[in-house]
Image (cartoon, rainbow, N blue to C red; front, side, top):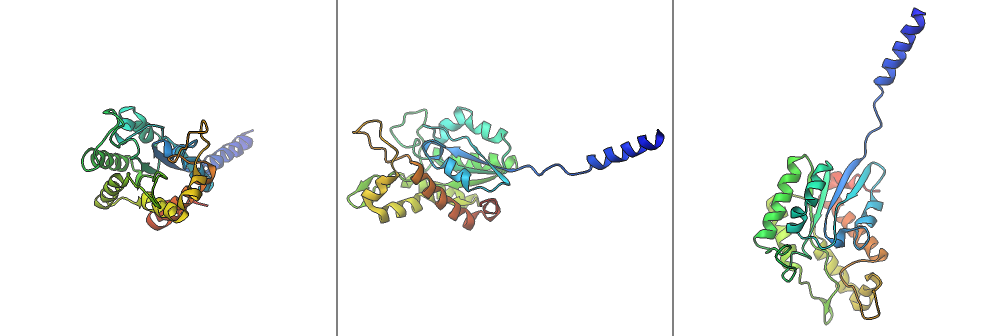
Length: 230
């Protein structure tokens, strides 16, 4: 009886020292509708992550750097304790979006991004700035690029704070200038009616292409995260 008890104790101890299965690395997304799973590149990006990573998408439609914090969505990102946070805003920070969302690229937008970076680092996460995805609106043969002031501000913040940068604005402008109007329109989600053309959000094809661009850039600027890609 004593011998059996001793063997049982040894067995229990051996089981307890076997390390638990390694938990997956959390990669959080913070942004507006162009980052969501349904209208942006979020779901397509999640598919590019390997089995050792988990994508948590906190992006919400209509959000700016201001409203994302005010609505407590940013706190949800921090509470999830991710290892990496990809941060992309700008569309709803622009003038015309109302005082609850608007920011100025040289002041409040910049300040909000700096706070995001500092607070992400405070919980041990690596913040990665992603410049705004361009709207596919052309002036003659070239993308209009009205989000450039916000993209430029984000780039400056990333440089000053030594944070990894995915310059999605520049890459997406280059892409659509090369494709032209007709081919760029193949990225548009279906319109609600015949008169509706959405050149801001993405269909499945567009999401896959943009997610691929982000993955390419991460391999250059965030090699530790890139190791988690397929």
